[in-house]
Image (tube, rainbow over all chains, first blue to last red; front, side, top):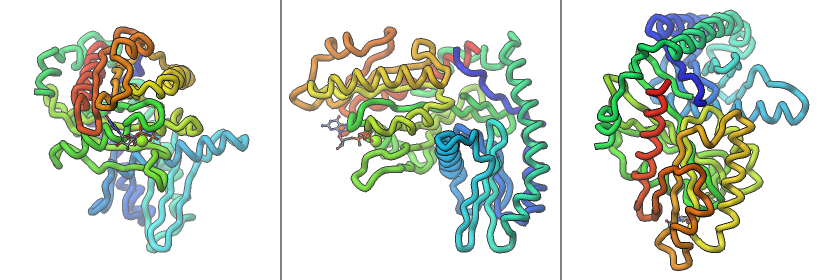
Length: 160
Length: 194
Ligand SMILES: Nc1nc2c(ncn2[C@@H]2O[C@H](COP(=O)(O)OP(=O)(O)OP(=O)(O)O)[C@@H](O)[C@H]2O)c(=O)[nH]1
Ligand SMILES: [Mg+2]
C-alpha cells in the first residue's frame, strides 16, 4: 500500500506562508523555508533571489536525514535542531515531526535570536501540518477525490 | 510520498534509481538532465566522491507537464551503489513513490545485481514498503558491451512481479526515457487509485 498523498489546500498553504512571513520578520532572517523530510519544498518566505529553493530543500532534507542517523548511532533519538554557521550567512534547521523549518540568516541576526523566535512558529507549523495530514487521510477515503478522475489519456498526454 | 499543493497546483513525486555500483544510475540522470529543456528541469546535484562515485545521492527535479491543471514534478534520486554506503541508501528510500532498478548486464556483475536487488527489498521493508506494492521498473543497462547476459536470462533472475523491463545503454541515452516514462506512469496511476 502506498503512503497517503499529502494534500495541501489553498487556505492551509496561505496560513503556513503567513507563519513563515512572521517568523522571517521576527528572526530578522533572509529566508525561511518549510521543507518536508523527504526533500519536497512546501513553502517559503523572504529574499530568495539567487537561491535555488528546490536544490536547497533536497539538500536540507539529506542533511537532517544524515544527522538523525548519526544521532541514532550514538544513542540519541534525533537532533531537534541543526546549525551551520558561516562567516556571514548561517542556517538553522528545526525538525518538526515530518517537516523542517529552515531559517537562513546573516549578521543582522544571531543564532540565539533565531532559536528563540522559531519556537512558537514550530508549534504553529506543527499544528497546521497535523491538520493537513488529517485532511489528506479524509480525502483519500472520500470517493469523489479529484485524482480518481484522472484518465489513462491524461497520463499518456504527459509523455507525448 | 506524493505531495499535492492546491495553492500552487503542483504534484510532487519521488523516484529513486537503485542498483549495484557502477551499473549506470548516475548516467541515467545525467542523460535525462542533458536532454531536457531548461524550463523543465532544475539543477542536477551530485554528492559524489573525488572519483565520481555517488557518495550520498544525485538529485534533479523534472517537470513533465500538466495533468488536469496540475503541474507534475518528479524528484529523481540515485542511491550510492557501493555496498558499504547502505546507511545512505536507506535514507534515500524514505518517502519513495517509485523505484527503477538499474541492472548491469555484464556477466561478471550478475552476483552484484542479485545482491543489490535483495538489498533493495530489505531496505524497502525496513522503511515499511513492499516491493510488490510500489511502482517499479527493471532496466537492463550496458547492452552495448560484448560480455552481456541475454535479456531473458537476466529477467529470469531479476524479475520480481511482471514489472516492465527495458534494455538500455544509458551512456548513449538508449532506453533511458522509456524507463522513466514507465515508472512515472505507474506512479500517477497509483495516485488515481488513492
Ligand atoms: N559501456 C557502457 N558504459 C556505461 C553505460 N552506462 C553507464 N556506463 C559507464 O559506467 C560507469 C559508471 O556509471 P555511473 O552512472 O557513475 O554508475 P552508478 O551506478 O551511478 O555508480 P555508483 O554511483 O557508484 O553507484 C561510467 O563510466 C559510465 O560511463 C552503458 O550503458 N554502457
Ligand atoms: Mg552514481
